Image (tube, rainbow, N blue to C red; front, side):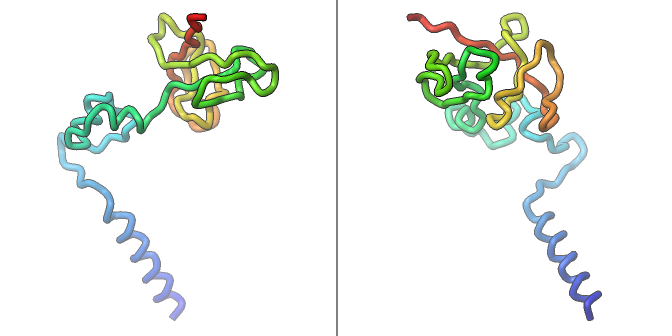
Length: 136
């Protein structure tokens, strides 16, 4: 009886996990959103407007310019709660203009490297990032 219950539970789990998956046919292999360019993602999502897509993946944030306070992160401008310095905006850029390479996951914004690589916490490909200099 226990075996039938376990088998039924396994069948249910497999059925539920298969429900939300898109069928993959030759030439139509599914890619994760991290492997697609914004244009490819827009095509895959049925023409979703770019404004809506940009809200899904935020690469800009504010941080303290001090290396020892790189863990400070805010979605808005302000001052560092540890030293009082003005927070600077960090944005994705080209490799030539990069100040550092960082993980695109907001939870890992403290990850910084001098060269391309992978995030040691999640394995995602590091992106070229720069700190925008304030106009003031």
